[in-house]
Image (cartoon, rainbow, N blue to C red; front, side, top):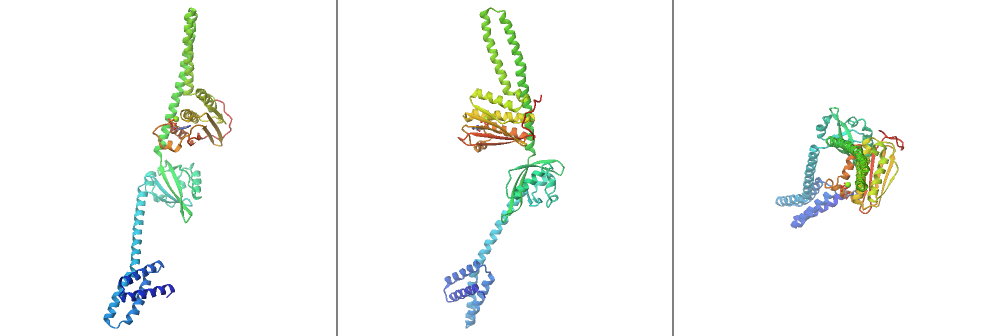
Length: 444
Ligand SMILES: Nc1ncnc2c1ncn2[C@@H]1O[C@H](COP(=O)(O)OP(=O)(O)O)[C@@H](O)[C@H]1O
Ligand SMILES: [Mg+2]
């Protein structure tokens, strides 16, 4: 018998002696404590049984009569039960914890099984470990066709390099921002998906990837519809701007000539009154020209983004007194939708500055960075709480949302940096063809 057990054996002997000597509750309490101690030391019920057996034997040999022996046996049994109580309680607790665990596991299962997004796990070598049932509904594949296989054939070949890079990022224990990948359905069609991926760790080691993928077909369709609508609107605006500028402008010019003719045939005092009318006509012409330029500067189509932005900045500056500096150059001509989007975005940004910022100075800066064109619009005004404004999305103000949507249509991104009292900066990035920063000749 090891020393630990021996010590407990002595205690058990004492407890039994006390109980037989009529110490009732106190002795039972001793036995209970002894049971607790045994449990705490990591010993088992069998050890307690051994202790009880030894103590009982010692007492029984002293028994003189059968009656005495029966009494000892009965009392020893009561004490034994008391010493086992802590084991019984601990056992019950384990059962309760197990039940709770099973229930929690079941809840989690239900959640995964009924989720409308795909929940997936990957092993570190890029094999699919699990997929929830909705994967079958969305893609038409059976889960069994993919579990245990590499994920790569599921991804559009053009998206695969990015997917592999992102897997590396997650395996390096980092969480990338949400990303989009096209997934090959059983029908062969590709489904646009929005993905999240996080590392799965065990004992501080990354053992796989856990992620959620959402089918964003509907959102993509809506974006595409919006893009087409924007383009159609832009065309319409262009048509109206040109009609205003060219047709109405020419008509007004003819009126001018006509009036000059009439003036020649009139006596001087009447012709002076006509001069007033001609002055008004000139003002109308100016306003028309202005309006048509604001609607759609022909300069954007003819000369490109930079001159158009400079023209816009100049106009805003003259109207509002705001000092606007344009730095850097957008470089090579870009596809019309990109140029239009950037022009409209800068226009909205400047409108916001004049409407909300109480600024005195704005810097518009273009930086060409490989395949990205970055454009920032930075004011020194009151600034605003970006998160709060984003949270009240849709309640008021379509400007920033409109900017975001225009960017979605051309694959660009928007970052807003601002805090109350700190001015505001819109940073826009759009993908462009790689190439020099020199402007191309006009397109038309
Ligand atoms: N440059 C800026 N300076 C200060 N506040 C701004 C600026 N730009 C935007 N905001 C704030 O963000 C809000 C949302 O802007 P926006 O989406 O363009 O809507 P709207 O201009 O119609 O209010 C504005 O109401 C304003 O509070
Ligand atoms: Mg606005």
